[in-house]
Amino acid sequence: MPSFDHNYAEELLRRLLNHSNSCADSQNACGSVAHHFYLTLQYSRGLGPTLPDSSTWLSRSIIKPLVLSRILPVVEIFGPNTPFAIEQNSNGKTYLSCLAKELEVYLSLVQADELVPVPHPKLGPFEIDDWARWHVAHFEYHLKQLFRATATS
Image (tube, rainbow, N blue to C red; front, top):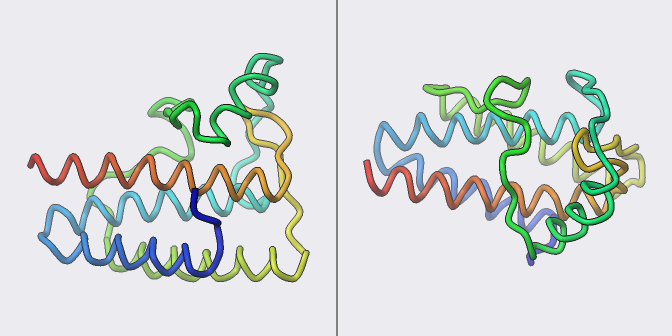
């Protein structure tokens, strides 16, 4: 699994931008996904809505380690009506730019040892490394969905 670092961030943005440039539908879809990534990065550093802890023993003890080690795939555990729902027809270029800035801020905070991680609302307490593994698994899950969906449209 790739590390969540500046190299991964650059590659993530490159993949989204290249896909976004392939057609108008891809640009809207990439913008939607970029906005979703932006919101989850902000949440993981304590910005955005405060969500109640709905983790359980099962999710904290069994599901979390399996998802973070990518034995189990990331699945949408929030449902469609959450503060992190992927918006359709988002402005692709604007959201890619916002995501690039948020990635830079997030990774700078990690590097400076200034990031105070918040718990994951469904999987419980997360350390910085847990969030790093989550972000990679989560981003790769949605990129796979995005590339598959736009290939068939």
